[in-house]
Image (tube, rainbow, N blue to C red):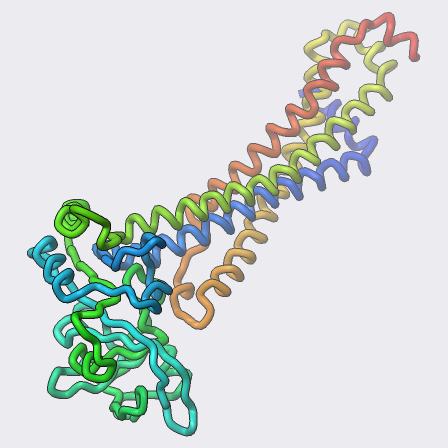
Length: 401
């Protein structure tokens, strides 16, 4: 205990130099932990969004691009699934539900002189309730077509059940407004119009299917691989006809990307902490040089080498613990604020980020890791000067007295 008090007294004697060292550690620890919390929060948000459709397989026509996602730009080119291919998918995926999706773009007039090009999605009337939820109104039927409008589209143009719109010059009544769906592995209708397959085919003149994708609702996550293999065997036997992806695969891709981003952010914070470590090394080295005579006196009265080593290591550890403690508290605040701001930007205009919890065990783990890294770095930085001080011979040290 006496050596710890001795170390604290030495730091107080050079309080300004010690303060600068502590600030360096604070910045490094706060950078590591807060950037880690930010990366982890975004990763968790994406995982939560994708997991909402965890039992879904999406099958698209094969292109050189490979893979798909909601709103894939490949749907804008003339690459589609034929009716025969959809029937093959149904046979392969039996007994699970297969939902073929028609997708195009047309000019839509919303009334009051407002118009714009909007995505139009065509679905079988029986498939619509399985895939989409409505916020108000009713689902369209084959004999009463109507249209469902995405929640953001309805909000922007003040559309509600009974409103009239014109798609490509053809009048349609709004049957209902869809509930917010947000990011999904299959389709995102929030800024789109959903119509029945019959109306879509008659309006766009689609021939031989022309489906942008087929969605398989497996229901049992354990059966996803079995269904994927069955579709792969039936359709891609001779050549690649379709691309198959499920929400787990997409989640893995996003987690890999955000994992790399998190490592990069942690690296930036680590550089800050290494700079602080160099500063501690410099401060401790100067302290040893300035106190050579003091070390000589201690050694001459019987203080052992390991006790001299402990004194200087304690000084480095005090700096590390103080800086890491303040940095840990600061990182919790900064990490929370930055994560909330980033999630707000990421989910702007949606309700997906409203109930999202930023702080969880992963966030606490980043704080603990940052603090432990800060203390460990300080101890390592202080070891060489402490070892050098302990190796001084009493006679040589006394010459500086």
